[in-house]
Length: 509
Ligand SMILES: Cc1cc2nc3c(=O)[nH]c(=O)nc-3n(C[C@H](O)[C@H](O)[C@H](O)COP(=O)(O)OP(=O)(O)OC[C@H]3O[C@@H](n4cnc5c(N)ncnc54)[C@H](O)[C@@H]3O)c2cc1C
Ligand code: SF4
Image (cartoon, rainbow, N blue to C red; front, side):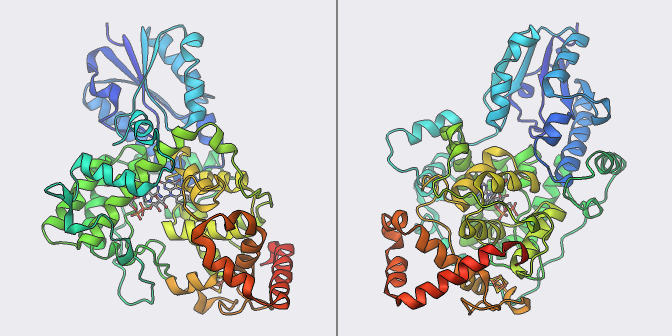
């Protein structure tokens, strides 16, 4: 009879490359998809993220049925509390003899799932997630025996392994990395192409109503929902990016713009992370654009480095160091998150814009996440766990495997340097160089003390001063520490006093 094997497909595994689906006989398989309370609310997920996943799940269920699969779909309104409850109900209903699962992206869930066989009374098999280009085992093999796990060396091995941007065994163009070409600041020097707005179908409109009704306290302005919810539409977004934005991607990768939340970025992480796009196909499409002369090598390499390098590397690091990684707090950062992290109501123009678009839309590009929001959190010593929960809740593409190393490791240096060779700490000067926010800000990026001084400036020196002992062990920090020590006592005192005052009135900045 049909329904002998059940496959649970999670909301972030909506892929035809799902390892259990790849080997399944539709006639003997029932696929379970479930919108459940626990997954939708274990942090305050952005409503855009919940709507994207619910709608993409409902569309995937329809596509599975078209391919002949039996589909057991539980809607949020069905009131199921957890994934286990959904599986138990489906297993009983279809009298299944075994349950296949693809390993989840979060440690929390993997821990739960390892106990499911005992509770549910049927064998549960957890399969390796073959959608990633480096398995957990591959990463452990690469990491074993190395003192430092630097992304650059991992990335070179991945380029060789997949033959991407390679030329007779050597990196295309003679260099592995064109990062130095990717740092141009933004002075509105060219037009940003307008992105097409996808048309929302009936399924998505229904989901948006459901999310608005059930998650009233979560961030996210659903009137701006603009995301693709099928494989075809996500591919359309990637095609648009390759055609219109990729040629300028490298040049403005690190830029900050007042007039655009995304500049020339891909806007594809949300699709890669839930299975609507596959990472190898994305890299191959970008390489093909370079090979036919549509973009420069630095644009193609810069982009492929993010997907083939950073994305796979952070996942490897996450599984390699969990569960301890989550508890790390190397700089003892404990200050509560200011209330304006949840509203964007701060007079710091760069921060206000980055926070507002993150809350309303669920998206901010890398430099906003790292050098505007993350940098402020680092300099002000904001609580690591509160900041990590904020990032996990707010972004459309956030899952712990990718959010945690980026936030705790890269932005907050709370892992003590596993991920980053030095803290990504910067004053207002960096933000001014990279973008055009300062022009319309009430603060002055050139001033360090006084009512008009950019808060990043005194906080930067406060950070350098309070972590002096730890930073002195890092040769890359020598110049900055030396400069700080050479300043006169009075000068240093005045800066530190002003920084203390800034921290005392952090809620009103
Ligand atoms: C503090 C912080 C938190 C972050 N949290 C997340 C998160 O929860 N989910 C997430 O997918 N990314 C996260 N990132 C990484 C990165 O900022 C986003 O992947 C990127 O902004 C997504 O937008 P995009 O698709 O337009 O990216 P693009 O700039 O167009 O880059 C292309 C792709 O490269 C990949 N990529 C780039 N950088 C990284 C990185 N550091 N780690 C992993 N993948 C990367 C993404 O898949 C991205 O879609 C975080 C970065 C920081 C600094
Ligand atoms: S002056 Fe400071 S706070 Fe204002 S936009 Fe510039 S860097 Fe941001």
